[in-house]
Length: 155
Image 1: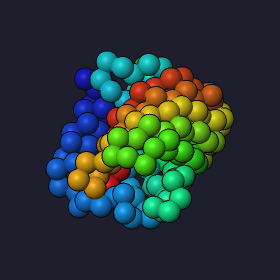
Image 2: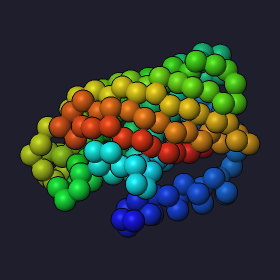
Image 3: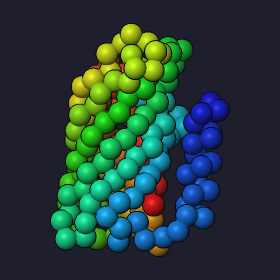
C-alpha cells in the first residue's frame, strides 16, 4: 500500500473515533476521503472537502481539493465545486453528485496538464452517531480523469 493512501485511511479511521459528532445538524461540515486499496481505478486520490447545507433543504454543496496519483505520473492537483442530491431522508441515504473541476497544477507549478472538466457519480451516505460515512463512485471527465471509488467521513 502506498504511503499517501495508508496515511489517508489511518486518518479517516482515527477521525471517526475522536471527532465530535453532529455533522448532520450543522450547516457546514468538513470531510476527508481516499480511494479504497486495490480499487484505485484510474489512479489513487486523496480529498479534503467542505460541505454546506441545511436540514430544511436536502441539497448540499461541496467544495473539495484533491491530489491524484496516476501510477508513475506526477501528482495532479485539482479543486471542485459539486452538488449532492440525496434521494432519501434516512440514516442510510443514496445520492447523486455532480459538478465542475478546475486544475490547480499550473498555479502550483507541478505540471502543465489541464485538469479542468466535470465530475458525475453517486454514492451512499450513512449517518453514524452524527458523523457521516460515505462511499462514492464518480467519473471525472478531465485530464486527471477516470473512475474512482472513494470512502470518506464527514464531520
